[in-house]
Length: 538
Image 1 (cartoon, one colour):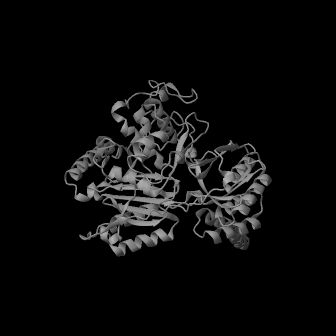
Image 2: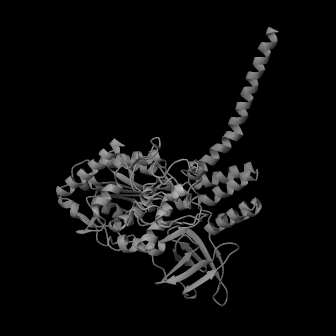
């Protein structure tokens, strides 16, 4: 505990020194478009070290890497304009919203005092947890939560095993409850608050309020989720690198930035994650901090270096990168940034890379239509500002028309078919994601045959993606069709050799097909020799 307090004091002193001795580059901010160095070397990056970072980047399933040095782009690889899901990075954004209102919030108020519950399930002890306990993830409330992984759910401490405020555990119930309490206390809906307090003043290029949505579960409190581009996340990271100051305005109180990104709790996660946790931020020994999301999405901030790093993974395709690889590439970027800046550096406006605009056919230019398919929630299709959007509960997804009734969902890069009647009413919508949802519903009912039919339609609609094949292989294995599953996985690996799910499935099949029989044969051989020895002795 003493070490954590010392680290917090050091962070406060460091921020004071940095601001007092800030070079001119500390005053550089992007306008509507980022500025970019002509090369990483101009920004002070060592070319040979950048090459090593690029090799690691290309060897893994990263989709984008954006590095900001002194307020301008130093490295821009991949799809940094694409709005990927940010997953748990949302929690650090929520921390910023709390910071905006921190002077008017009593963080020591208990859940009972705030008249806050979850389906009337909380015990008196759980109700004694404070708002600060929630945002530091140590409430001691271990109830089911929206948007938690199977691993999070299965490893969760037993309910009642820890008193509020006494034990840190990365707990989605805390974060979701903190989101609900934010709206209750401030009267602001979270997505609108992000638009007002972050997206607008930071001049985010790609964020739209419709890119956010809520995930519900048995808990009364949903999890908000957002799709956001790297270049917008980088603006948020730069705001924190500058301790809440943006173009002369203190958007987030400096004291809140320091407190929330300081070591408040030790994580005890065996080196798998950073050693400390603040107020919805991961904290390193050196005082740098990061926001992290499932699959490898990372926003890392190094205030002492005036450096911001954004790493993205295509989790639409269920890609992921190992945490040790994330750690290695971040260390490589920091090392690469230690060169000498070019005193004659030149900056240019970064390329916008906007999606190609194509006119939506007039028959699809209706204001809004809804359609219900099977047991799915109503699907909304809307024509807004010359663009067609589809929404099945995961944000309003922008589409681009291809031909006839075929579209592509831009951020997901997923095919979409919208069939209309002669009178212009929607009669069917087809997209792999909806087929997967129907397959999951069928599997829950115990009908694997029906689930397979839905997934086969996803394969037919999107044959160039590995995900439908991986889903099909899982069902084939569940139905005992190992030979078919093996062939299906081979197709997935041909499309995406680095897909970890496909590789894991294939390795599992090989072990069952070859290693297990070989091991059994070896054991039988050893047993035979042993019996012969025993018989000879007798």
